[in-house]
Length: 179
View 1 (cartoon, one colour):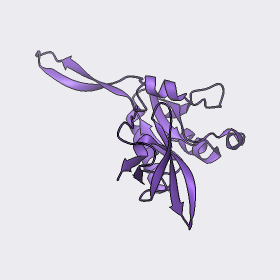
View 2 (cartoon, helix red, strand yellow; view 1 turned 45 degrees about the vertical axis):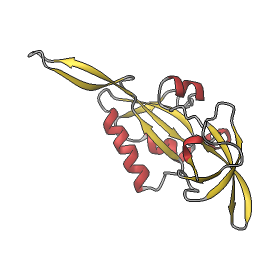
View 3 (cartoon, helix red, strand yellow; view 1 turned 30 degrees about the vertical axis):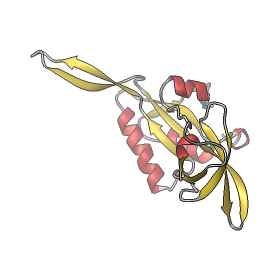
View 4 (tube, one colour; view 1 turned 90 degrees about the horizontal axis):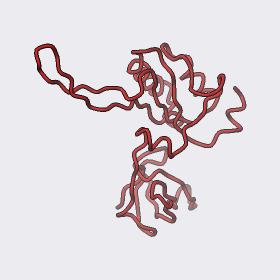
């Protein structure tokens, strides 16, 4: 598995295959391991895409339930390396990552948006030169100035002053708020 470190391209969404009915247990266990081992800088999010569905019981009563869009699958946004692969792969109920052999294949940004694990974020109110505060990630609480916005407005580059020098930081649009 050591070739993960050379191929690492930052946080991406990966699909984890689970035993049927174990999706919620696997999600809860991953979240607990992330908290216990302080892995929040390498495992960012865990999702089980659901859609609200109206179900009618035998008495004719309707009830809204959340139906899993992809049964037996859990989506994990993480930096793939030996440690994160090992942590997720060895959770009870996980059968493996989606990909050839034991090699996980990340979703493209377009695939993540299409299957509703990554929300589209628009930055209509924020423009280049605006002062912002970082509200998510390891620089939470730092302030900076927006220097660049991606074409689809989902990512920004913020110039942050830290340790007496300015450095550009690439962030998701939802990781900042305008001051």
